[in-house]
Length: 317
Image (cartoon, rainbow, N blue to C red; front, side):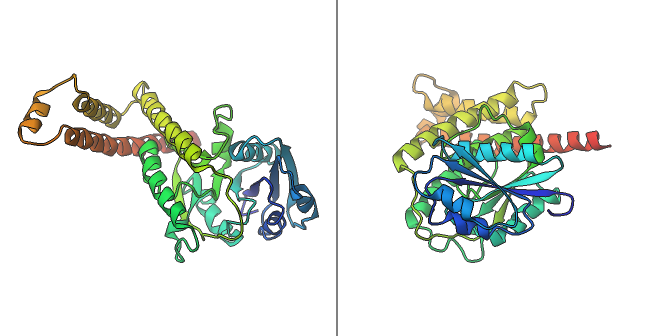
């Protein structure tokens, strides 16, 4: 417990027998409840969970291989049922890739009220990304750009699953629409931005050892890329057709449409013809228009956050 806040930890685990016991036994003693979600493990993961000696209350949930996102959702919901007062829910992987010593730093801005969702940023840590493979670093950079576009705010390390989330977010979360597989951190970031929740990235240590990833790269990039594109448009259209629509959203939409008009060959404008006459390809106008759209989208995202903060302040007075 930290002040008046309970602390819960969700640990998704699938075939993590070599690592899970050490993960559980090194979680800080001020954690009140640990929910391990055993998602269809076929090795000795469950035996290692039961053998772990933890200072915290330990709960094991069992799923039948529904995916890491579904496992984390189940853990969050278990903590919602377990705690009656304010609490923060931390996600730690079952493979030991997250340093438990970073937990206190991660939960601090949530408990102090400076953000609603804190997430780890391995690139911002003083030790850098350490032994992170080069291909993962490259993939993280690509997904950082894609998630920044989709969420409307700068996200440097979207794939780090070390997160701390306020109970207020979890009580309003739409569990029926939640993303069930890999890519859940990206989905969460877009939905949090859409609802106006405050997101803060916190430096955490990058830990790599003998663990094996179950991600199939092509399938992962295809599914997550499509999801980000779809959720980006859903977020913006939900704001566009809202009674609290901001001017920034309207400006972003206009610039976005101009970009498509410039790109489509069967639609021509005076501006496009002038650009072509000067020897430039129309794609430059498209890219410029979409850059302007992203700028206004970021300001719209900031405005939505302010609206939520102001609404909460009015409720508390």
